Image 1 (cartoon, rainbow, N blue to C red):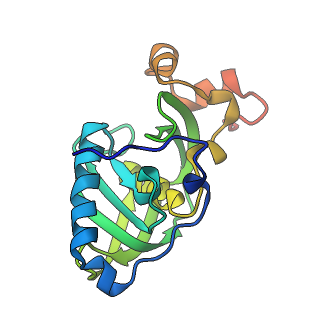
Image 2 (cartoon, one colour; image 1 turned 30 degrees about the horizontal axis):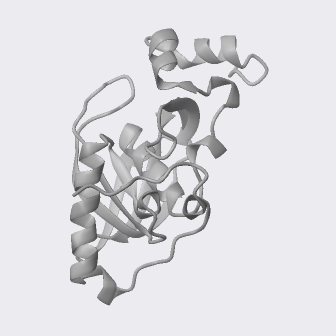
Image 3 (cartoon, rainbow, N blue to C red; image 1 turned 45 degrees about the vertical axis):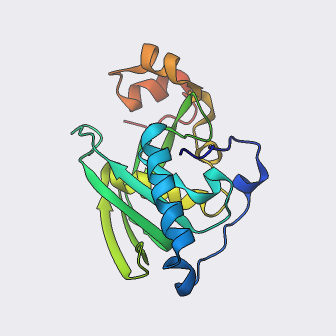
Length: 191
């Protein structure tokens, strides 16, 4: 069974989600929810899915990425769960295209911290600490944003907003700095 992914405009995406208590985390309902979210994320397909994206205002997200790409510092991330996360951002920012299952069919350039530290609970309520960089750090920031009512479109470079098809057609292989100089010359990074 796959869950319905809500789209931008649904109020649940714009409110802070509530933390889960220790007893809730270990409940059969939450454990079943985690499995359904995993199936839904795989089916979409996506690399992360937060509970607000399926209409539930809970501080819970599932993450998994099987792809690799040296350019975006992307390497495989095994399936895991973050509950009630606290995020600490590194100082260096990186701009890359980003999309979202709740803003289906679109992408835009978003600036995110290259490195992050996340303190959270896992699927059993055990405290975990994650040190991440590159694409994995981006995924964590994106999913944690969902838990606070923020979508990537709130952080994007507006002039880079595009359908996913046009992003692939017109920007594939174009360095971000070059793309920004063409699309957003006022805010493009200086060389």
